[in-house]
Image 1: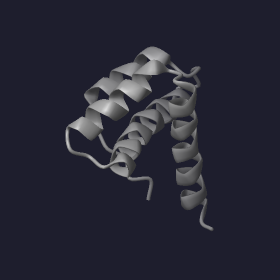
Image 2: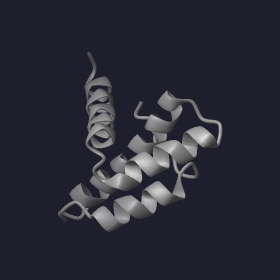
Image 3: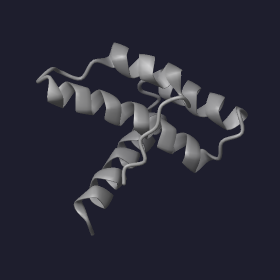
Length: 86
């Protein structure tokens, strides 16, 4: 398995864990909003993963801790941001 595929699967699992735990709650709200907008569940999960990856990349690039406010902001911007993980 390629490193990119492993990373993608890990990110998607993190999103699934956030949904199951309802933490942060905005993830479930965003999932519902995207599904109600016509996206399939896998597509919606992929969009949420985009928001997560953008925040993780930013935190790593700037040697900062994860910023939940930025993550929430990115979730609210969906589906207008995208990361395909490939």
